Length: 269
Ligand SMILES: Nc1ncnc2c1ncn2[C@@H]1O[C@H](COP(=O)(O)OP(=O)(O)O)[C@@H](O)[C@H]1O
Ligand SMILES: [Mg+2]
Image 1: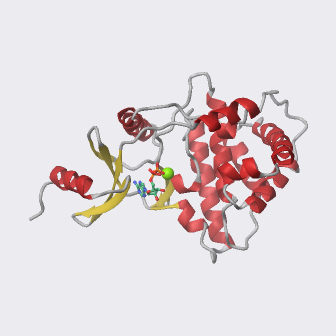
Image 2: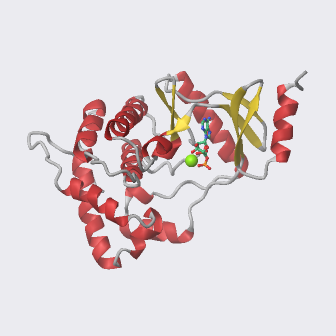
């Protein structure tokens, strides 16, 4: 006989020393995530003030309980909006438990021997999933490939804990989502071609966020100045070592073909 689910998860919680762990109960897989505060470092906030880059918009400071409440509430909201998310099956002040929603997208696309078609398949699926969130007037908050999962032919959103100051508008948070996703693609290790322009166009067609192209190019210009100024060290800080692939993305951004007939809003990037 199995002990009841609540006792079982409470025991998993005490047993586990990591912030996130998976376990099986009645042959079904679950994930236990412990409450922990969210905040951005002081240097992070200074960089943001200096360069005004959406990519590094600091996250709102929340206590562990606030962060847990925020993430679980957002999971419920997404579910109501028919945005695929795992069910929350247990929650208290210290942790919550989610049903398993498959392997994360990073694990599919970062394999050294991943095939071009596979990579394209998961990227397109992910772009469509991010578009769906944005079309429902929401943002993900951490839209990197590792925070999207794939199960039963569907992309699920996880890790929704980050929130932002009320002064930051929804379009900016959506732009940040899209950027975070594009940047996570620079970590792909297989020798394949990443057709950023195609993916960007697909996102824009899905969401009608036409001005994002202009915003991406403005960002590319800004980053190029930053790179020159900082001799790459600053960029390395939040992107990791793989700067070369990062450049391929920004090269694509420079060369994006913009439809001159569309009147872009002239927003600051
Ligand atoms: N419900 C879930 N289904 C499948 N995988 C999950 C689930 N929850 C978490 N994971 C896995 O655990 C990793 C970390 O969880 P996440 O919520 O992103 O925490 P963190 O805030 O530490 O990044 C994810 O990248 C994913 O691989
Ligand atoms: Mg995560």
